[in-house]
Length: 487
Image 1 (tube, rainbow, N blue to C red):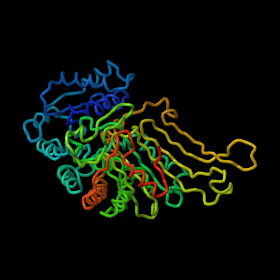
Image 2 (image 1 turned 120 degrees about the horizontal axis):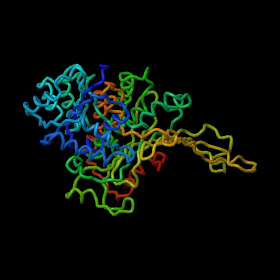
Image 3 (image 1 turned 180 degrees about the vertical axis):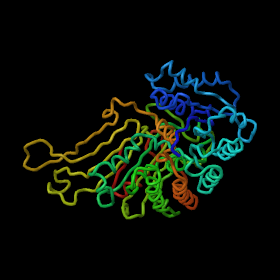
């Protein structure tokens, strides 16, 4: 499938994701000349709305969510003319028939379908598309997470879509894979001769992955409770980052080769048990506190009832293969953290022998550290040792930073929304930055071992005050190994 789709069909077009991300991304692609002149966007949701009223809603969303210098009235008018709206509700065949009429004569030029809906609607929507004759070899379908809530339900969702679409037509979205810095991990590892020889248990002491959010439930009450941080963040975003860090070098940069290596790493994750979750995992739930100088309420107060759902999780993971044996991967993510921060920290081992004197005797020798910041700013920092200026007889060392700010290095380049890359790849049929079914199932297999371990150990979330990096046990999780969280 190499043809680029000329039609984009969006289900869930009145939702928050569509307004904040998908329509601004499509607009930016048009503004940059990356969409064909006769490109058609068919928006769909349950509510009956006229084309003109919906175009007005989209224009308002563009004014609100685009960067200030990106909105252009003429471009927005051209973009609006590309959009039509068709109300469709899953299970109503006549509405899918009406939808097919809006796309009539365009299927041979490719159709990309984007499901920004609850996963319970994925299979019914695909069934409606099939019955309306909208699925051809040139039809692609993209699905937003969550793909299930465990391995069994994930298989059910995938089976439902797989009954209508071949795997090469299915694009499972993880928007972290659209971030420039996440993609830059591949360039960093495989495009620079100095890193890959050291990217293993011989040189690396441990790896940290942190995704911190300052927000609480933020209107996601109905979704989040009962899901929690492990399913919401670790199962998808964080394990995708881990797989890129841990994967073996692919033979080439193509979807099959890259994803083959990622799934091997995911399948090598050591399952947890009722015993190991006690020492290798921490669950937390935020209580009242202060974030950014603002007093905020606790999770139970926001929810309006007590809950055992975790809003924070810290994990010590092991990858049982030749490259990573003995190297712990520490993962932590949570809500109501002190800062919005997503980063990867690679801690290298110390030099085997110091010629500058023993640690603690003035040399200041420290192991090298590589920090890759994903958000809010994007940078790569390598902490190395350098001689402190001076005339002392003994060589004194200080840690200095080789700092590559991607924002500054590519100052002439606009920082793109992650969805721009993903939508463009969907239209082109490139699956490299999308998640394959076996990846999803390998992720859920590991996550299910943790959830089952928590249940068997009757492990409840520990309280932590909003504005802190989780419960104190999260600090103990890493410090008992002689390491500390990077902050």
